[in-house]
Length: 75
Image (cartoon, rainbow, N blue to C red; front, side, top):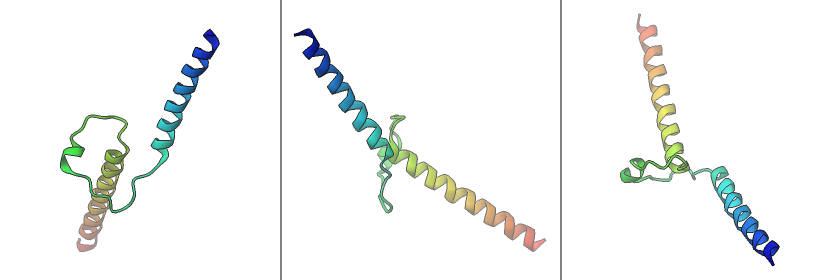
């Protein structure tokens, strides 16, 4: 009887970790608008916030590169 409880526990843990890792692999769809209160959360596993932060960082880096390019061309 004890082995059935262990199998149920292992099955539940497998299901939990399986869905957790599959959820981490799914990317946020393009055009998804994220509310401001969402960006203030402290959840380190939030893939929505990570995607938004990456997009913002990439956009800011591109803008900086374009500005530097224009400054070099103007000199």
